[in-house]
Image (cartoon, rainbow, N blue to C red; front, side):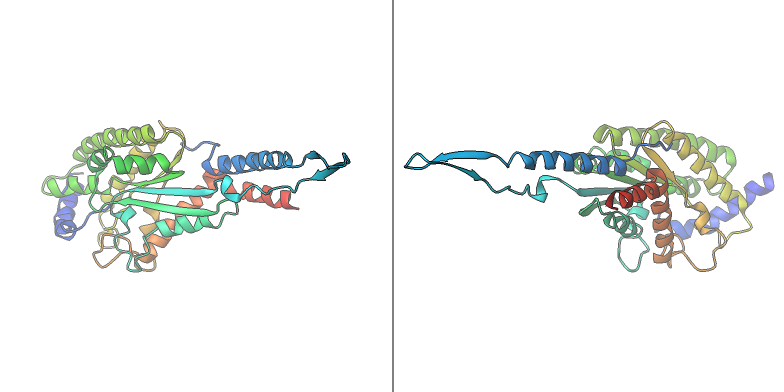
Length: 309
């Protein structure tokens, strides 16, 4: 164990220069998508009933006292009467901001938006990206006091959060000469407290929307495969995140750690810390798969097809 801790110290010393200029950023049966569809169907029934009242007989008497019955034309209720827009809010660190995506398409956020845009029961999908490079849980707590952030979260139909990577890297940078598992465990406990406060604050602004929280990955795996301890530290922090999420309804954890292990192609940007466009594509796909599982979308879409038939 002493040897392993020493290895971690050497590993951290090697990477501290690399990360000095950059930083990384349960489930239940109810879902915001299912609720949206139910609302749409109920609204459609109300719409048909509402439209029906436009048919009525109106008696008019002519000058010679002859009575005629006229039928007024039914008026169409405008589509704008039924709101089918969808607001996605992304809140967090550099992963949310999309740092490293050379296509400048917003990292994984554009992939998530495309998923919702493809749904027949959603007409318009808008994105609010609140990602800031270098943000830790402590930064998110401060930003949650900003009126603009609160308003965005309040209007969100779905919320996606990336945080924790910079909390972990802060421990490495500040203690690289004396790293040990006890230190990581202590800081991990403090991270859990801050994360719980972050989620509580988010819920104060939005009680009902589903929250998807991305896990951490080890960006140094390809260069330091001989140091498995770092992967274990990342796994432990992800387990802590999961345990916090379990305290809140309508939350889901999106694991991405395995995406960056033993890959055939490079998934990192030139800084060897943030994902590149290929890495973000994989992360986006993982989020979409989680959304489908969480919302049972295969069943939902099958039911829609049956109804059309």
